Length: 309
Length: 259
Image (cartoon, rainbow over all chains, first blue to last red; front, side, top):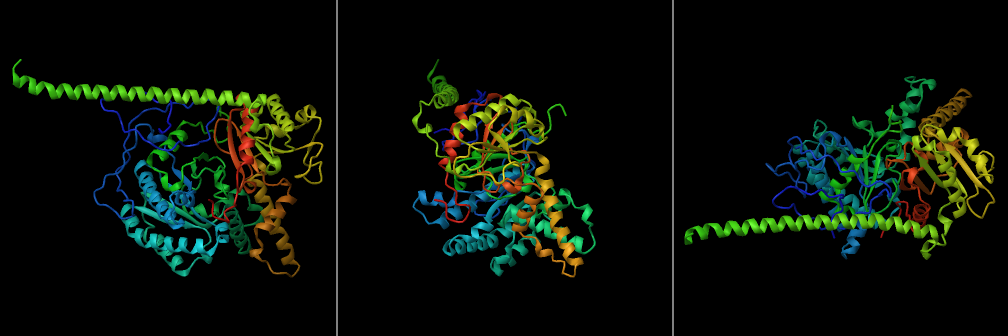
């Protein structure tokens, strides 16, 4: 089956590009307007180091150049991802669920590399929600151990690759060892600026709003703020996404076939372009990301305003 | 031409023919894929028509138990087409959807409330009904109208309400407890400031962009979001299909392994 990216222009090349054999993405295709062909301006992303699949740096590995289908000026600054489908991916292959999560980490490494190469400034991924704590212990514990292993093996790599690592969420219920690793990785990479990787762990959108309100309440109690000053902007400034210069995702990608945001970054998603695909997260690769970006660049984002404004 | 010339010329010829063949194969593949896409679009149009006519049996009877509350987001520029909005609501009524929330960012639909209620005789405003009936078969459609002010602004007002109440208790000798903020308190405060409606099960977005355009985020944690395209091209068949597909969805709310 072919990767669906249409209408397909006739390329003026002597040798045809590789034909991608991939499952078809079930996107939220509008049944009205056909997709608009994006401008074909070839651009290369700023030079950047690459991340290997296993999370170890490879010196001298060249960055991915920006595909011709994409316009550099229209690249989203902040991409958010709900990485769904690890378990189903593993089940389809007769593998344990942990294999799905390990494969998912590889996909994350690849996506981080692409984001860094193609000019995305912030990548936020939904790793673990507050609701996930209600899953069986046999499922949660291996996931936490995997997170520790991944952090140990990738922190040096992130330091070398210019990736700033941040975590949002309430990790008070997480093992102390994981908490220490998170603090260490965040501290060691805080001066990096090529890409900010924000991992939402033990996070939910509602939790974020509630903790923001608590922060505001503390400031009122301490006399820093008056009650009359409180408005939506004050609350926004206290959300956990204050750790980044670009707190509002331009594009949200959800893999795995579900069409919902599942309590992720709810406050921040008002004008975010939503892209849902049936591809399972471990299978989400460069072509899938490219399709999501092409779809994003074709949309007219008016932020609720009229076109004439 | 001597033997040497032939030896040099032949591989070049083969390479040229091969490249030409590959290029032709690539063009042919692109034509097939383009054609397949066009067929797919036409197929969707026909499917929508067949669904509208009731020809496709599986869409004939919808089990609406999961669709207790449906939200419609319309891009504000398109929301001025009140006749289309009314038609959409009439379709929903005919399907059996009784609780609908209408949202547009700029409040165009709120301003057209009276016009909409004049055309939908059986509809009542959510303010008129004591509670939204989410089961059984009510004899009227309940409509809720929202705009941007009912989203983040409402949360700020609700938060303010909790602060004020807490400060009152502090002044009466109680301790000012900033940990008073829990999700449940915010839920209650939102009800008090007027954000009465429940979380929609399904949200249909009509407009050019695939975004919910500021719909009250507090109410969207597990809402299924479907982009329907422009309101100008809305089709009954597409509506039925979107609702039917939703009724087949299984939600585990993050608590259980999704297999």
